[in-house]
Each structure stands twice: as C-alpha cells, then as structure tokens.
Length: 448
Image (spheres, rainbow, N blue to C red):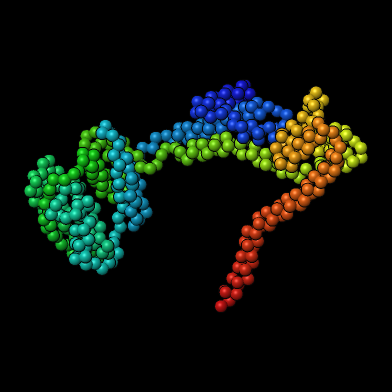
C-alpha cells in the first residue's frame, strides 16, 4: 500500500511539473542520481525518492493537521461572559470582538482594579482641569467643533483627584460620550458639558469643584459601526461600574436589543502556530531528500579524487609487470573487494560487468571515465580507450606520468583541505580567546 501511494504521489508531482513546462526529472538531477546510485536507472530512482519524500511530507502535514483539529476541538468556543479585573491599582484593556446580526465589531474596554481608599496625595485643580479638557476631545481637535464621540473616561495624574464629565443635554450627548443628535445642521448645535473635579486628602478632607464647558456639535464622519461600537463599550463600562467591588463582571447579552457574543480579540481557540510548524516540517522533509542527494554527489566526487592517484599508480605497476589492462583492472578490483561503499570500485565493477556482457573493452573504459565525470577520470578513460584501439605500446609510460600528476594533485587537495579546517577552527579559537581574556580581566576589574 505504501509503495503504491508513493508511486501515485510521484506521478501526480511529475504531471504538475509537466503542466508547468518543466522536465519531470531535470538532466542535472539525472547526472547526480547516476553518479550516486551507479547501475540504477536515474528515472526509476528519482521516482522512488520523490515518491518517498512526498509521502513523508503528506504524512507530516496530516499529523499536524490532526493535532491542529484536536487542539481546536479541545479548546472549544472562546466566547466570554465575564471579564476579570487586574490586580489592585492596575488597569487592563481588553480587546473584544462583539459578534451579532450586524457582524463583528472590535472594542477596546479598559477595566480598572478594585477601588480602595486613596492615600494622601497632593493635587492642583488647574492641572486636573487642563488634563481633562485635553483627554475629553477623543478624535476631535477642538470642543468648538465636536463630530466624533467624546472620551468621558477622564483620568488625572494628580494624586487623589477624581474627574468626570456630565452632559447637560442627554438628547445631544449620551452619558458615554457618544453623539445622540440625529441631524446636526451645518452651523452646529451648542450645548454644555459639566466637568466635576473631586479631591480627597489622606486625612479625609475633600473638596469638589465644577466647571461648565461650552461645546458645539458639528456634522461629522462617524459611521454606524463606530456608533454601535461606542454604545457597546458604554454598556460594558456601565456593567463595570455596577460591579466595582466584584472580582469579575458580566458582559451584556444584547446591544441595541440584538444578541451579541464577545470574544477576546487576537486570541484564537487554537494555536495556528502548530499548523505552521507542520507545514515547515513537511517542507523540510520534502527538500531534505534532494539536499542529501547533492551532499552524496559531492561526497562521491571527493572519494573519486582521493582514490584516483592510487588507481593510476596500481595500473602503472601492474602493467609494468606485464599484465594487460583488463587483467590489471580485475586484479585491482579483487584486491579491494572489501572496500564497500567506495564509488571508484563500484564504477570499476560496472565497467568489468559491461565487458563481460560483450561491450568492447576500449568503449567500456571510455564509458567509465564519462560516468565518473571528473577531469582526471575523463583523461584516464580517454587514454585507455585510445590505446585500446591503437595498441598498448607506450601506455605504461603515459600512466607513470599520469600517476606523478595525480600525486601532485593529491598534495594540493590535502593542502586545500588543511586550509579549510584551519579556517573553520578560526572562529572557535577567537571565542576561546575571548573567554580566557574575560576570565583574566573580570577579577582584575572587580578588585578595584
């Protein structure tokens, strides 16, 4: 069942690539597959690998999708009917979503901590009045041109000071600061707000003052949703004021006579990060296989380059002893048959197998160099192919020169690898030096 699923997914994947005008298996990938998996058809191996990685990605997505669904079912509905107060002296602003027949409205409701007896504080009425006049504006720029809801949630930085606003005409301005006038002429409507300031000292002495603040209402840009949100916020504030001595208070079940459901804004009943993690894991599994193929290809090339010098040297020695090329080839394979996983001997075994199947010897050597794909092996394959057609006279001398060149290339490769190791060790050495320096300097600094 798993094999069929892999094949089906691979067929779907290749069909999508073809519709997009791309090759099912690009030539560059075929070359890597042919090199990493010698003796296997690259198209067949690609289908096997792609089917496996696609199945892994689908299974990963399925698992994380089920976990997300389970978390969604476990969390249930995130509606709230009460708001908890913060600790004493703190204010917490709830971002709520009011859902009803009108749709979903976003509200911001500040909830104060439980009221206690104020401690003694000094205050100035002039400062409190100035702050209150600035805060009450809301979105308006002047009390001479009020078109948006006023902010009656007045606060004062003066210790012991309480500030509140009262509209003189509730038919024009509601108790929550919303504009109640249905039609406002272009010249505006004048009205009055009453600003009440109450100050209480720590000894119980209190003083209250009132100011009449003239206001002019003008036509504005408030939408129906804004007005509805303001009325919902006002109902919540009224419920808040009625239960100031309680730890929680209930939210209204209706706004403007219509049912409403509140939710904490920004809080989802399920952590969607879980599903995002599943997508990332699936993508990792999908691309990991291709990355492993590239790393295997690079590792195979490094092995071939390291083994090239020994191969040429052995060929030169054995042919110098009188063995023909094929016998020398078989002898090298027999002596190294225990070295499993070495790409060179796998390619040599494929070459010998091809010759046993009837492929001409010189052609098999040329195919060997082309399969390896590296410049030294291309030279060796061409050398063996050419001399196989024209005779082996002088081949031993050519192989000796090739062995000498291969030895020099191996020295250069070892030197490059040493430089790479040194560069990788540089950063840890710098970190260690910094730690040693810190261990020496910190005690010296602390002694001063």
